[in-house]
Length: 254
Image 1 (tube, rainbow, N blue to C red):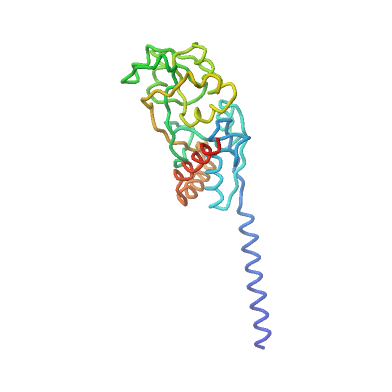
Image 2 (image 1 turned 135 degrees about the vertical axis):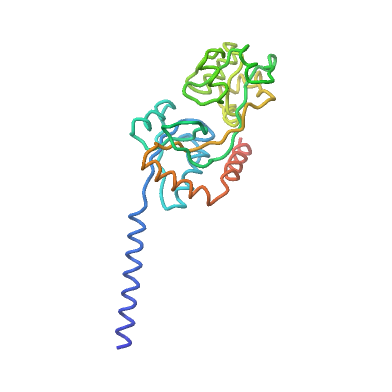
């Protein structure tokens, strides 16, 4: 009788374990997000698809889920979410929007003005930039003040398809300065075309802003579900330390 009971208990335990394993496997989902080529934060040729891709994937893994990314031109990456084809996109600066829900921070980065060394930009307040021709990337969020000045026409600006094009336009004097993430510029300096003009350029000593990066999710029930999952995962590790370590590793390997 005791032997039979022992066998039954073993069978029950194994059955319960099997059900738990199957249940966990069934609950695991893959989140599809759109992104862009924006090294060192995202990119198909980067280790772990870039720093922010690695951070988002780690947050999801802590919650038992996986990340899959679709790399698109930036405006299309955002539009795919707006029309409901993809649940979210990243990395995005925190902004006011009724269309999107924003995750907790994926890490902080600095935005500056890239300028010619021989023609530094002199400014105390953002409105001082109105005297200069400013280069921005089409579809990118800059700072609230700059975006408002461009919108109301007080700021002369010229758009480019990406940061690389903007840098090359600056180098040949088509514009006076450009808005760029400092870490993005440091990474792009290794590009052969940028390397040729980099000795002529510098980041202005006065930083425009220190901004956090986020996942932007569609503002509906599915978006809210994944927002909660991502945020729980992000709370389980030191996100800024992870970003800083990755940036340091990139600098050392250059």
